[in-house]
Length: 395
Image (cartoon, rainbow, N blue to C red; front, side):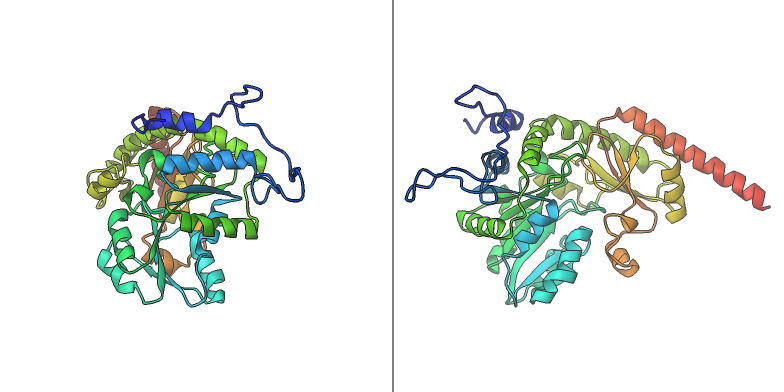
């Protein structure tokens, strides 16, 4: 297929495969754990589904093509993908990681990998000088989330990749928030891109999955060995569901991102909101950089209210968003990072990561933007009325 086609066209062509025997327009669900072999000396491409399955392979080929990588891999969860990637490291190795990294990644680094002699240093990856100072002779990986979760800090992927190569390190990039629709880290020099595919790629809050795409055959071969050895592969039915979600990714995330921009601008002028975190806003400190390496501010934003009590009151008064963990679904999801995605961090660690007690994260879904804004306006008004009644009663 010509490389000149638009992403939306490429996405459909990579996820729709006509079955040569039946003409079926969808990839079949191969619900088989094992595969017949012709004889002692001639084994087929597939033997056992942990090692490879045609349905999962169709998904893995699709994400590799969309990210522009050598080979893709589907895992049982985003953390399974991230954990497998970190197991490219050995005892005595060191990794540089963002201070405000996702809580699950924080947990695997601080409570698991350390027991196996893999060290880490948390830094502000938006500060290249700080990143370089953290690199040791035994540093093997610089890990990046951009925009970061939940404060949407922007890291220069190309600059980090160049720095990593100069020090013979690998660059891993969590691309969950942007997806290949808006950002392609491998094109910017990254060695491995990771996704919690549970989020935007699935898009319907019905699949837990992780994806990884390697830039080179060397890394791909190592990831495949670990995927097969550890066995945390994505099930066949979930692989098919993820393929189905992938087909509509482009239209879903573009609609959500358009609404997110409008909602971020709404929050920006509300007196109840101390600060809005969204790289699509002109006053975001990483806006210019983000515009150079991504084509949208994305569908996730965070906003900080006065304190936990204010955040709690707001959540209790909104009607449209689901209050839940996770993000990237057709429904808008409102989350409280201090007790949800970043509950693994203690208060001091959250403060260092810029996660205040009044911080809420919003993953914008496919509802009408004006309806969401109306809901938020009413919630602010209801909270204000409640506070005034409380003050009068206390008198």
